[in-house]
Length: 79
Image (cartoon, rainbow, N blue to C red; front, side, top):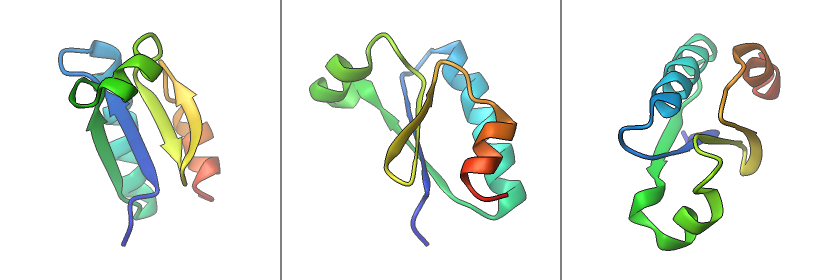
């Protein structure tokens, strides 16, 4: 099963911690998977998202940045 949600984050980011908690809860509730990618591991991602992390993608398309709304994420995943 491929992860439908991707969280782009950075270590030590408190907003990333908040986003991860929401994503984990919604994905667990809906039986979905997510993956997390550190932008610090890829210079291109670091340039692209430096001022927007955390950034959430659903099904390969940008969904949110900074804050993740559980209701909006649930709707995007069809829940």
